[in-house]
Length: 334
Image (cartoon, rainbow, N blue to C red):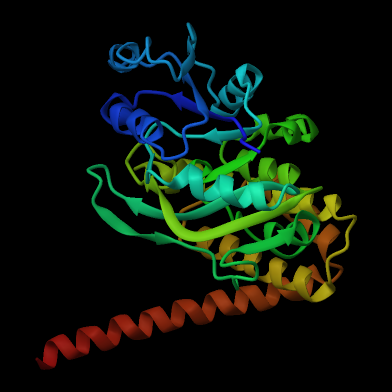
């Protein structure tokens, strides 16, 4: 079976990267795809770049927003509504891919028709395309060189803890599963994709190809690298992280072991207390109330875990102070 893939490119002010992005889709060894380009009212010269591709046979739709939507997830919804493919590839406009990206992931979905979501490892690159590192999952290859698991267990054992899919550009998923997705994912500022993946794979299987065939751009315009990330967005991320974990918890009908709930609570509280103590985030009364209420829902012994997390933060600080003092002493004696 030859599946049609709809490659959706949601763009906002990525004029600099658009040619590389679009060409990396057009040059795929797997050629049964269509391209949908969405521009969210860019203020740069993105439109000039996009128009160069208007008459290409692979370009099925080009849509320019007259007003910025304010949400990439709203753009996702718009693109999927226009898509004719069996599978969707959210090819983010500042990323790019190896030529065999689609072929590798489509081969997996052809071998396993019950796979609802397949993704690969990612290379991280800077604004100029210089390699920074790799984002790979530490899971055992259990099926012909790749990892395969049912979505329920993946939500229970992995997605509950963290977003195992670090970049949307590394994913293809079944379009039909989009209609099972809870619309609340569009209300998130940062973690909407995390909740989205939970719904996409929940009633299906998830596959992970360990090769790094995607290039994930780490630039000043990305959330994790923005100059204002710590000040403005890290608190949002922490609060949304808890919200998604609660969503996964309810999704699996609370079927998560006490051990894992305690582990999550400890790690989460450590992060919150540490960042608050460093004054990198400020929690108001409503934030504190939400965190306490949510963690008490997860774990009946949240209070005990709180004191353990507080002690861990203090020990962390003491070790850091000790390392700093030791370094100063070594410099003086040098």
